[in-house]
Image (cartoon, rainbow, N blue to C red):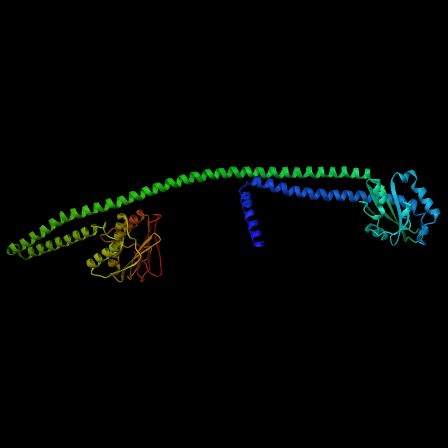
Length: 491
């Protein structure tokens, strides 16, 4: 039961809290500030009213008690020795109370002895009777003058209730003139209509003052918060405009970036076709002519052995050897420029193909491993991966003599990573080794960067070389970095 009630309360509070936090700062201040200041005004007003009433009543009681005691105390000194008054004293008290200066102020009067005994009363029928002692009566026996606007609910207050007017009930101790000992307590009821009216206007004035001060405080605070609220709104609108402009610029930059990426990829494809054409032209042009020249030199060597002599034979042999070396260089250049058909190859087959080609060309071994691989890659990425592995393996053969050549491909969370490593002599990261007939490191960097990739080179002397290509296919963003690494490096 309690759990269901708690859940219901939480369910009811949640929408209110959401509505509260949706309000503006100014609205929150107006609501909360009004509640806080109103509660504070009520508390202060009530306290001030009570203090005013308490002060006025106490002052009035003190002055009235002093006035009454000056008349009553000399007449009742006999109560120090007995519990009742003589008839003469009772008659004298009645005459005093009937005087105009007292009868206009005092409605009822009693003299109490200890134990709740009424020794004298303006109501003769209660003289000699005992009543329960009230709190104010006990305080008076302790020497304290007390006063309050009485509700007239006590048994002995029947006459006062019948008057139907507002009365101020006061208790004042009566002392023995010789010793100062309290011998009785005087209780009298003073007409308080005028006093009550004065208190009403005093309290009303205090409430008006407190309300005016509270309103001024609220107005001052509201002005400050309103100014801050307007500043916040203007700054928020300015920020929203800036965010809108920035979003538009970012969107434009993204579109331009994508256009540059597409243009770079098309450039790669066009460049590969151009390289293939150059390779074909070299193969069909200079290479064929060099082959024909070698055939003619062999024919001349057989036909003119005697006429040219020994020195001529050496010249022909040198010419043939030079042409053969030039032909091999041209064929090597053609082989480096030409790529196999990559469209139908998967990324795994592509890595294996370039590694196998390197093994056949250099008569070395390349270890190939995979930690996942994408199912498909666009042609520009295939070309980039092929050229990256081809160039780095060529450098590994040239500078590391092909020691522990390794190619590793990793594919995870749209991130493609290809690593080529060796266990050669390594080099300082600040130095860049020269490349052979391939693209070289600058060409690799530009090619990978055009694909939105990232190329990092790790190297340390006598610790081998490691080159890592990373390409985030989801963002297509990247750069080129070189770092030292104690575990290995690349070129």
